[in-house]
Amino acid sequence: MRATPDSEDHEALRAAVSTLGRRHGREGDTAHLWSEAGRLGYLGVNLPEAYGGGGGGITELSLVLEELGAAGCHLLMMIVSPAICGTVIARFGTDTQKQHWLPGIADGTRLMAFGITEPDAGSNSHRITTTARRDGTDWLLTGRKVFVSGVDLADATLIVGRTEDARTGRLKPCLFIVPRDTPGFQRRHIAMELHAVEKQFELTLDDVRLPADALVGDEDAGLLQLFAGLNPERIMTAAFAIGMGRYALTEAVAYARERTVWNTPIGAHQAIAHPLAQAHIELELARLMTRKAAQLYDAGDDTGAGEAANMAKYAAGEACVKAVDQAVHTLGGNGLTRAFGLASLITAARVSRIAPVSREMILNYVSHQTLGLPKSY
Image (cartoon, rainbow, N blue to C red; front, side, top):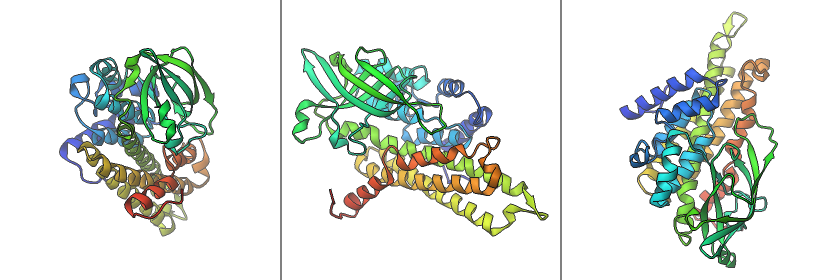
C-alpha cells in the first residue's frame, strides 16, 4: 500500500522499521522484537540524544509504531513507555530522573507503565481521587487505578495523583514515579477478552511512601505536565490504530486478489473492492491528521496539538474498526479462523475507539473547544 508523502528521512525510517516488523511478523516473540527495536534506536527515537535517544519527536515515534503495526507487530507499550513516560520525564524531570530512566527507556532495557484511569473517574480526570500528602520530606500516595497496561513487565509506573488541597475544586495533578516493588503498591490482573501480550491491571496504593525525588516536575504545574503526556498518548494511539488497520487491509487485499469464485478473483467485484477502497481512503485521511497532530506537538504548540490529537485519535479509531471489520468480512469464514489471524483484531480494534479516551468524549471536546457549543455537564 502506498504511503502519504514523507520526507526522505521519514521514508527511510518507515522502510527500515517495516523490514524489522516483517522479519518478526505477527506470531514473533514480542520481547525479542522489543529488545531489537530498542537496540536499533527505534524505541527512543523521540528522546533527547543526550540521554541515549534519537533526538526526534513524536512524529518519528508514531511512524515507528505505525509501521510495526502494519507488519502485524502491535507494540502497545510503545504508547506508554517512550511516548508518555519518556516524554514527561524528558520535558519535566530532574537531571537525575532523566539520567536514571531515559537511557533505559530509549534502548528498551527499562519499561515504565502509566496509571491515570480510576474506577470512579473514567474519562473525567477532574474526579481523580488518588491523593498525595507530604510526610516530612517524603510523599504518601493513596488511591486506586484500573486498566494499567504492562505493570508486571514495567520497572516502575508513572502515577497521576493530586495534592490533597486540589479537592477544593482546582485540578492540580501531580506525577510520581513508583518503582514496582515499593511497599504498599499492589496489583491485580484484570481478565480481558482481548488477545494481547500486554496484560491489564488494577493497582492499589496504600500509603505508598515515596522520596521527594519521586515527584516529576512541579507539584503546582497542573494540566501542563499532564497533557504533555496525554497528547502523545492520543497521537500514538492513532498510529497504533492505523497500523492495525493497514495490516488487516493488506491481508484482505491479498486474499481478494487470489481467492477465485466462478473463475474470477473476488476482488474484481465492486461489492468487495469498493469497501476495501473506502477503508484505505479513511486510513489515509487518519494518517494525515495524525501527522498534523504530531508535527504540532513537536513544534511546541500544545494547544493546537491537543485539538489535532483528539481528532486524529477519533479518525484513526473509526478507520481501524471499519478496516478490520471489512477485512474479516472479505475473507468470509476464513476471516474467523486462527489460521488467518484477523478475527482477534476485532476486539483489539474496538480498543482504539474506547481508550485512552472514548470517541464520545472526543466529540464533546471538539463541540466545546473547537465549535464553541455549550456544555451539558
